Each structure stands twice: as structure tokens, then as C-alpha cells.
Length: 114
Image (cartoon, rainbow, N blue to C red):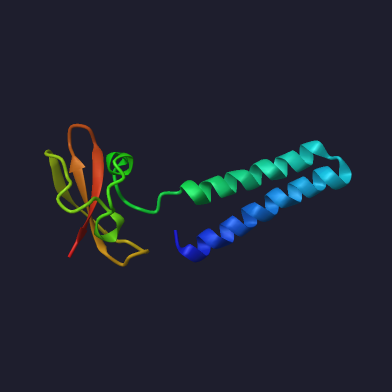
């Protein structure tokens, strides 16, 4: 997700939460206000926790530095992963990314290609 999109969604989420609290305080409409607060909070949660990188959960848990293009760190693929024909351009970094597949589990990993 681009930084401008993130900023716009954060602003919308924040304003929705604020509007919900204003509705509750000004009119006493708890249900309507609470609905707006929850919707705004969900938007903010999505902005904060959205993963914009193509890397494994293992790399996130270990807090590894992202590799080129936001994918797996260089040389970090476990044994059993094979390159596929699936290639795409990461819209954030502009890097060419290749998908690697571990056939027995179906796990996918993404590595930048130079």
C-alpha cells in the first residue's frame, strides 16, 4: 500500500472514530456512535497492521530485515523451495519479484530478482 493511501485511510479512520464520539456526546445515540467508533477503529487497525511486504511469517517473527523489494532476506529460503514461473513487479519498490513454492506444503515465498 502506498504511503499516500495509508495516510488517507488513517485520516478517514481517525475522523470516523472522532465522529462516533461526537455523536455519543452530543446526542446520546450510543448505538450509532459506537458503530462509527468500531468502523473507524477497524480502519485504523488495518492501516497499522497491513503487511506491505512479501515475506514469510517466520521472517516477521524473527524480525529479519526485509530483502530487496520487501521479500525474503537474500539466501533465506529453506530447503525444498523451488522457483515458479510466477513473476511480478512490486508496485512499491518497482523490483521484479519471483514466487518460490514448497510443493509438499504449498507455502510460497517471494524473492527479488536483479
